[in-house]
Length: 160
Picture 1 (cartoon, rainbow, N blue to C red):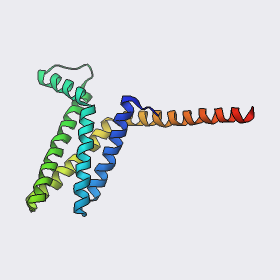
Picture 2 (picture 1 turned 30 degrees about the horizontal axis):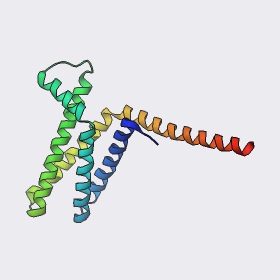
Picture 3 (picture 1 turned 60 degrees about the horizontal axis):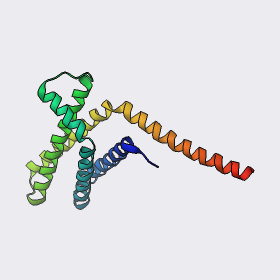
Picture 4 (picture 1 turned 180 degrees about the horizontal axis):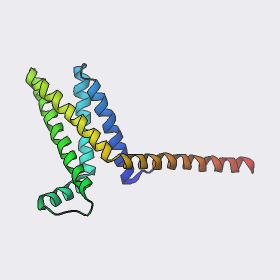
């Protein structure tokens, strides 16, 4: 099944969501938490790569101070994404430091930034809720439609 660009974004987002949840709930298993954290890093880097043009365009618009026809929601989305990215880098850095130096301060920073990522992701999901529902419907109905078409062809062959 060929998803195209939107489908690829959707799949990367779903994988990223599951990895984020798995990483969050694996904190008691140190090795699993580290492995899942690095897997999450790879998926987030892929997510950034897929959205790099949008990020650069939005950054340029905001830096130049131009008003966009797309409005406040696009700007809010950019700032939420920037917040999530900043918190992720902070969480990653504190997690790497904790591998070498175990400290309550670094642990608290790591936990705080991880919670901030979670809250930022909730806002991000809220901003994209309609897109998520629409794409999910399209992918599910497209898949059902193609299976139905295959089933119809099989029925036609059996009836002939």
